[in-house]
Image (tube, helix red, strand yellow):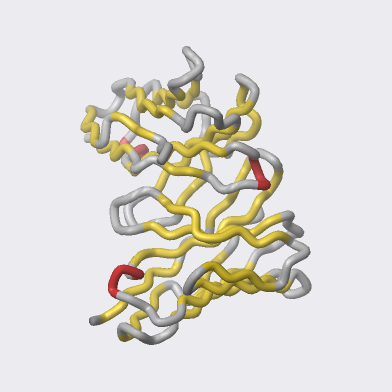
Amino acid sequence: EPEVTQTPSHQVTQMGQEVILRCVPISNHLYFYWYRQILGQKVEFLVSFYNNEISEKSEIFDDQFSVERPDGSNFTLKIRSTKLEDSAMYFCASSLSGRTGELFFGEGSRLTVL
Amino acid sequence: SQQGEEDPQALSIQEGENATMNCSYKTSINNLQWYRQNSGRGLVHLILIRSNEREKHSGRLRVTLDTSKKSSSLLITASRAADTASYFCATDDNDYKLSFGAGTTVTVRA
């Protein structure tokens, strides 16, 4: 069964360092998302990406964050200068049909900022 | 924001019992979805109910939707230990954003 894969599964970084989280969505999907979940808290929307551009972003997704789909298969989330409060689980998701369909989630990348 | 809010926050039941959790949301929706998250794992889609549907079944899951009250419920019948997880409702703010509630943590005791 097709699945969304994310790498790395866990990354530890120093505050102020740049981090890139990678995702390979399901191949025929058209909508791509990043969510984050701080330990024990709700799943928060960060950004959605459709037709090679950002379609929606939350207030969390400030200038420190960027997304890219560089080669038609990978979908990356970059955090330019990490802060302690960026420590969280980051989930990538993809969907074939946007709001009318289900989201398929990866297993997440745990980011720990020291 | 459209975020759904689940109730209760946590639920502990005996294996074989039913588990019911509720979700309330703020504005009109096209669809409402329920997802499950096992500890430390990604979210898994369970069921989608459209705004013109009132009830939907999938195996041991039953979802209801009351758009007049802006609420939905998820019932898991004959619970098993493997049903231990967090359950989230998700509402579509627009074509490009699905917002999740805080979730209900369900513990099924053997």
